[in-house]
Image (cartoon, rainbow, N blue to C red; front, side, top):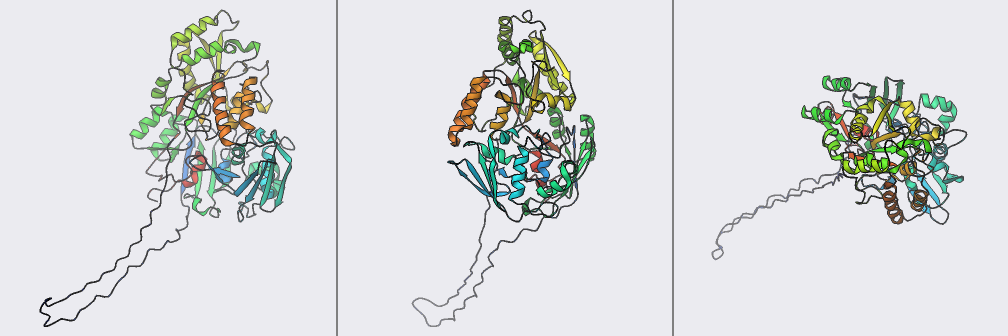
Length: 554
């Protein structure tokens, strides 16, 4: 993972010129001309000047393939857009350290498992109201709510089931205390995931009103959402972090499902940024003068097997078949072709080099089709199964990638079927918390989905969803994994937690309920003639990077 460090250099220049002229001889001082000394001149010392305020101008236009659930509310699935107009309680820096968000500082009392947050004074919501500890408590409580609201955000359960909201209080206008159920080293991850909403505004307009017109305290202000068409944001010129005010006055994101159309719009100048472009097209377009930026931590592409413990799971209920599917994949070839060299073998769910809990022992399986076929024979495939067909599912956007994976499996004799579903069904299958854990009668028992998404510095809570028996992806169901995960989360010592998480990762890899394929670079394609430097929080996500995008020449 690349890291950039900006080291300021201050140079103080002072010049003193003294010129002296003398005449005569040391032994014959008959005549001595008067000594003349030039006046001493000192150049003024440069002084630090206040940088000129950012004055947003112009419109930044991006095109993307799908708006998904079009969420503007962090408890309605996941609102990626919301990161543009909201601030979180804590943030990450580029070195995986937690830094202030709306909280300037915080304390943790291990004896009482109490977090105390000291909220920055002077933050304004977009409607001019002050952000206070009341808003923080309201947002934390609602993010983990099971009533009167219901949160469908996959990370909400890590507030709702593990923490003691009853004893969490507002101490004063700018101090909030959060009482946990037990000391936990990684709790700050959840706080960095919690966006702060305006309590008074929300209660005035109601949940539907907020979702129709959300406000926050972030660098962008919501303007308009036209379903399945566009979303428009406006720069918040009064943003409390003055050095993070956007350089563009407006940001417009258009939904353009066809990749060819998105590429053409980039070529013709109808957009500045094109999202969701295949890597072979990125290689072609960069060769034509377009540019890319790494916006976010490296991504992982992995395959996840749901409900494998049920008797009707079919072939994937046998670990030997899951192992065979892994050994059948030529990961290096996939990295070199599909990802055009912008990837490498690996990609276990949310685990990338340098992340929390990383160990070099997390090596991907080698390409070994002979071993794969031996494993199939040992499992009695296909005769041992009433229905030998293995199902994967994806949206139309992921169809070609799945067909590539299927070609490797079919080459060793596995029978596969690709199910194309819309994004609503796909998300409901993947995130079973919307209706509870997967049940034996569900259509997707034994099915496989791919998780191809950018990773994060610390994936403790993400991995609970994949590997534990409470996980919303309905993939994990192993008591040992549950116990090992508890060892990660029930300690306040971050070093102990890191070692426990590494051991956990090594163990769950042996279960073959998630198979890593590749670790890939997160590349965003843009036109360098209309877009300048990306100087924002590029290490977090595309949404966090938006307000730092400059005009050419800035």
